[in-house]
Image (cartoon, rainbow, N blue to C red; front, side):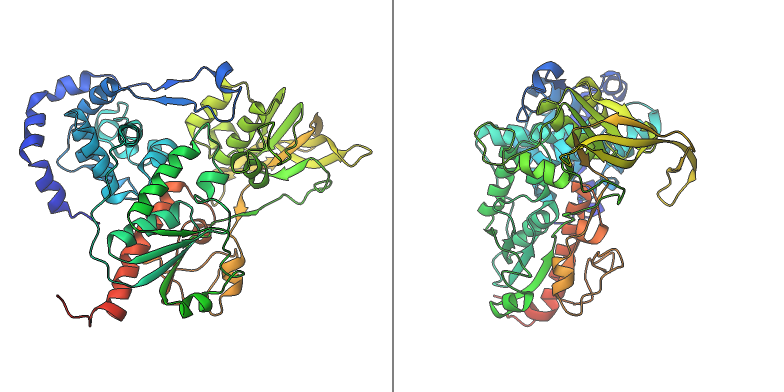
Length: 500
């Protein structure tokens, strides 16, 4: 449910909010130092893939941090949030100690608050637009930490609220893919009264949240609780079901589905096409992380094999590369090394991820690019020939272009290599639906503000449209698509229904 500016301003004038505003003077709020979240000690956490690094805030820490929020008349933080969370309202509820109400506010617009509190890059979104940053040049209110706290508090209390739902309208809608985009869309459509079914190709719900993000950043149990909440809202889930193979869109139409949301992600790994890349011991980050995160290959009891090695090299500089190299450390690598062709400043990974990796003893080989893999007599990789790079002028991404330095090649030892240089969109839906407009990169073309494809009843978002995005941007796409699909379905099927 979208909230108008007028609604947000009126909420701010509620008696309890006005009392809180008067309770603490602005200069006293500014005098409170930003909270630092407690972390597990690096030497302890690298012993297991399943130990979460960040411990979370105590209630006292959260309430103190919440007092820093100025409850601005124009909350610019909300403009930085892709899912439009009413940030001041949830934070002020924490300040007054009403944590369950804070969690309820989060759920008005976010299907996955405990997930977002952990993996969303708040530092470049809501927190970057905070009054403290924009006007005072001070550290922002720890919005992400507070979001995580409220969601975790609710989960641990056992009193889990379900958002308000409209009366059922009986219109069936299918969601293809159960990643963050699909789940966000499903939650909003359920609130609007639609009969929503999510089709997932894998055996577990959660998409990239389960297979792509390690449990030391995002425990599966946390994801499962958010999914269970969607079930309580009436969303149905079907696993091991590949739309485009198990059944086509036309088959689903015959079953009565009136519209579709494609959130099938970007599961196709990219490689660099350099000599020796087919050697044994070289794999994509997708495969590496899926084996561990989804299939438990880190456990001695698991049937799923995983390559372990003394020297593990991960190629890339994004969050997935950090997740892979930190996973390698937990799997027993003596040396776990990031090889990245730009400098650390250009790394797309979150600052927190890089910080945690360094604490854990990860080595960084920046301004370095692999140009060849060298294998042993058993075709197993043993070394990588790399080349030093220097930075030139900025390219289309706004980052300085890496330029090879002549004669700078040398070799490094590697028994396992994980390639994390990006992914391409899952080609199944684009290839199996006639009349669907697709870009040269294989992404589904949509009307940007509507998320509607060239086929009117098919909407899409997340990585299948963006080619690669954060969890929160994918969720924002899902919300936008739900809003516009509702308009489309209202006009097509529901406008003639008699009001009771």
